[in-house]
Image (cartoon, rainbow, N blue to C red; front, side, top):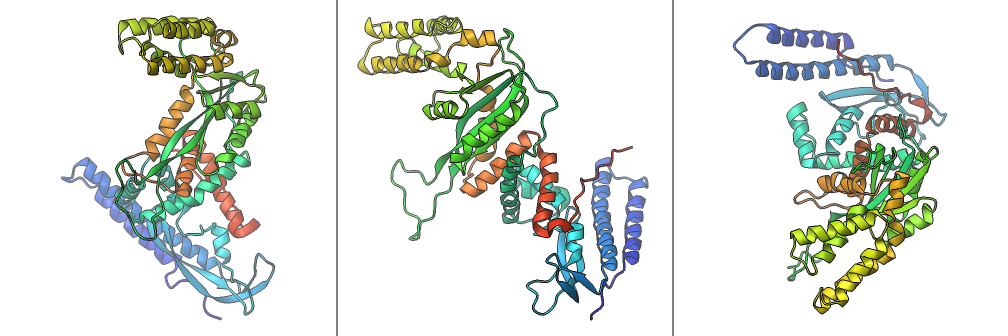
Length: 472
């Protein structure tokens, strides 16, 4: 049997740590000609080196304890010591070498390194802390910016493809996190539960033809967009006559690009988890028929409300059929119709638009046809435009939350210049960004580490919450 252990003992490595720390301490605390920011940079670089040495010392101390002649594998098989296996572990301090005892017997399906489970070694040997920091950056920045940030801050050169792999690994876990209802519940909830939904396009990569790229014809685009469904769930206080809707409480946002048929069910489950104490429930959307079909099927006890701004946009379209754009007359006409909306007089607005088309105020076949479509739109949505009733009930009437989510969750990250996505990669980032924006990140990452440990090592791994010490 070969020897177990490293050529350099943990004691010698600790001595190297002390020496390096003393060097940093001497450079930083000794008065000189350097500016303070230069001293700060030197201290940070030195502490990264000290951290790497400390981590190396810890791994060597762990290896020294890993000296059993025989172990029992997770499958219950007795395995003798075979050899040492080395692996490069990439940490936030840099790369460190990790040696661990490997146990194997002829005929065994696979060998076993007990130290992997004890330390919860990630499958890809990149530290969970490094992955977390990278993905926090990835929730708000491009992969190029992630790569540059890690290079600038931690002096780590990580291939962009590896950063994309972090997201593809963690993204699907984000769905399971919500499916298992692991997201923390808000400390405070309002009496009104609100569900809002909308859609936002994501630019997608097209499959590369086997015969190679062709010259595009006039009007053709090399890339196309795929619609992502965006959902928002929150509670709020009653609307008490204020001009603006009350602020959302515990707002959760998510976007579904990949499994679009499951979007409605996910929206329903999230709302169900939040609606136990709600006194009133509201479902807000724009005029898309499929969204109202979804509301009727899955949210039958919710008050359906057509977004106020969306309804107002149709008023502006009607006004511009015969009045100059941005003219005082157009503003005055729209204001009068909005006042009617607030009083629940949608029929009066419909009658006026039809009258304008009949009496020749709106001229031209196409414009009269457009006026008819607008009137028909209001007629179709009349029951969702009872804004006088909604105001008395204290319900919100605007979809600002989901429109903001379409912009902040999707557009700001997914539609930057030159970005094109696969369905898998785009969904992974949308899922992680939704977790981040919903302020569930810390809870998710603790759960993710534990879930990975269970997958890799069964019940043999113990994952504790990260220790964070406040500065004195």
